[in-house]
Length: 169
Image (tube, rainbow, N blue to C red):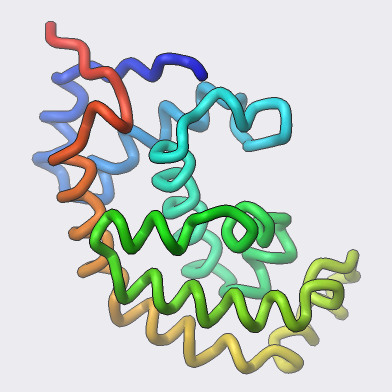
């Protein structure tokens, strides 16, 4: 595991800009550490808390821009559903999000092979019709995102040492 060092001044600045910016200070550093993407080789560079926070960022970005189908098609199905991400969100206090991820995980498990297969653009777009079952979960997420992000940001703020070493200047 690599030590993740974040300057206190960066955190203070980001905190003043909002909770998304605050969390991004951490996840930007994680992405920098792993070379922009998580692979089998880079997984050991981060601890479980750091992976959970990075997974939350990826989850938000993918679901907000293209839903669960895009999340899975972009190769993040295993990272989200085959790791203890939902459990971590519950530990962080984001219980609604945890429940939603468990619901999505059931769909993922039932259709994993089809959801993860290589597709053309046309086949990819057709998946949105084939997997409308995700639509309700996506709407649920959009309704809770701000609240759940706030809960997660509070958890990170209260437990910063698990997420990074904060360097005083």
